[in-house]
Image 1 (cartoon, rainbow, N blue to C red):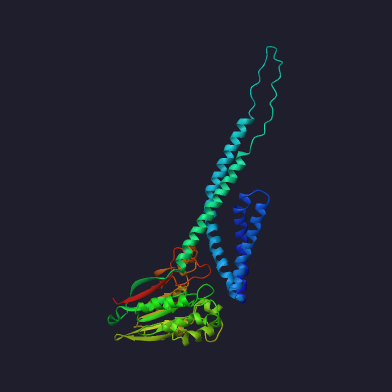
Image 2 (cartoon, rainbow, N blue to C red):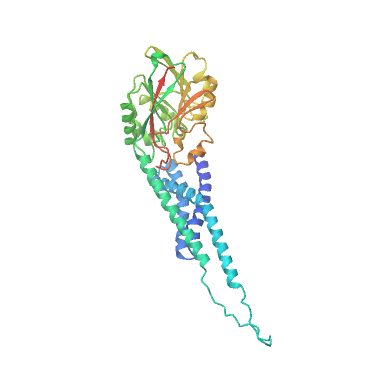
Length: 415
């Protein structure tokens, strides 16, 4: 609870600063003093309050009715900010050009005309009558600001609309072949259906789970791996939504590891619930997979950000990977890709992860890359192969741009 409130407090500060900038560009710069500006200011304040209210209300108070307006505005706000920041340079150049033209025009107008001197040289120059001229420079600046605001609004709305359609649509099925040097030839082609970040919660319920289960079952996989962030809420709130997981089918079992969001949602309850639904929860442990005359170690760790003790304590790589037969290949299920930096020390052949959502809202993927070694797809960390799936759901805004929802069929190949 304290972690959530601390996060919301930081978010409120950042969101407040962003909304001040948006108010400056979309309201103050595009209107004159008066009623319209006052209305715009009130709207900006209400929208600034809506974001932290949504985060607090949906995560703490269960006010799910806030989710749609609050999270949609969060996405629109994000893209408004990006578009306006991109426009800052051309806008600054245009304003500079207008200012110089205005200054040149004023200099030309202010230049004195030559005086006519009579024969006696005593005639005074004719008086020049002052003329009020319209402020063309100010009207051009106002037109420029309004044009930028309209362009930013339409662009942000268009990108968000596209992102909503992508996020709420069915996950795409990606197939990837990954060679493992130690994989016995008899196990060549072993297939692991991998899904992460389902994120059942205020905007995703039972139908979402049913669709994912149906897609995985059609793949006819040997193993199913659910690598964390299943839920954003308690068992009491979302137990029914998770129920279809009991229908997952595979030849050698379905497995689950905790993600960071399970720790915000009553992790110990969810470990018991997922186990009840028939998925083996790998908590800092490993399972022998005997198939087709060969053996593979499937290991799983709790999320690397977990702390405390009990049934879902912190990640323990030694417990999961220590003392094993190193001639066997080992596949590690770990929610966060960053776990590979420690897993590589234990000679892990392949790590399957999620967590990043592929960035979810491009260009946010560039920021994710600063924290995680692999954002999406297949990569390598210190000799350990890491495959990161985009996840089948979303967190926060029901929007995905540049990172469609995904279920992945990983096919292991022998040399």
